Image (cartoon, rainbow, N blue to C red; front, side):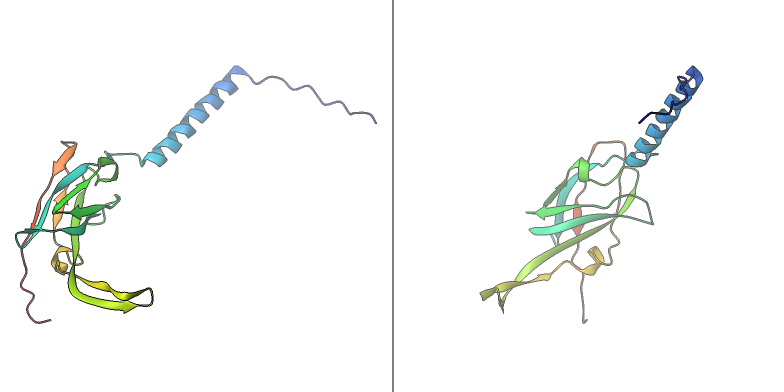
Length: 164
């Protein structure tokens, strides 16, 4: 068995190496830009505060910040416990973005429902925060980029539901 001889390859020229290095740098920059979202301040902000309904602290619930008016930003949310919420910066709403705020909380009714998994019955809980503060929320929050921390309290007034 004999080999056929391959023509000798010449080493790449300096301009070709410089061009390749430049292209690799541009490509790396594009990848980093796409991964980080590129453009604008996209840092999450820590937000915390008190949530009350009808003058009483919301004992257990959730708070959700959803970008308003089609803004391209992630939603942020957290748990309300003993009337307080605290969302860390790495999970917080983005600076310079307006958000719609939704607040939900459940309370027990004193009733129980027997299920196949629990013969004693599960506690029945109902949403007691009206839709005007969650599903149909008009609560707005504009995240300022001037500070790294934002205390924002939400004082929710009782809404007279009337007949439904």
